Image (tube, rainbow, N blue to C red):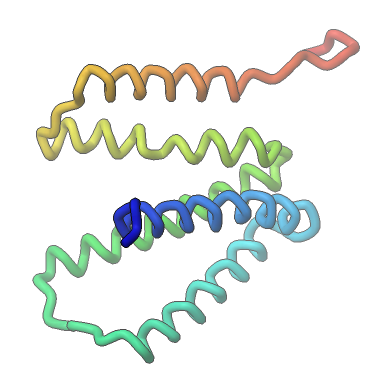
Length: 149
């Protein structure tokens, strides 16, 4: 019997995959355009989707709102990936860019509070505050040695 619930294992695996992805995206955008890097990303997603479609039973009878929510989620995810590639290609350091964009849960928290009427505990609110401070600290760039910055 595992000490951790299954979701925690999957979240940990996703953390590792996405952590490595930040490095591979920077390596790619150092050598090819963000657009081409995104296209290869999309091709990989299509291949993974094809495997899932072949082996996982799909229930096509969805309410339209669920279908469109899934489409919107995929579209926003793709646009997020494209803009992250562009940030890396534009000279952003992988350690900074990936760390900043990984703070996207703050947007989720804000939307959950506003639209889903979820409430944050005091400890969670402090965590949000720390995340905002972390984003500010990560985005600070040292001035160039010649003082022209």
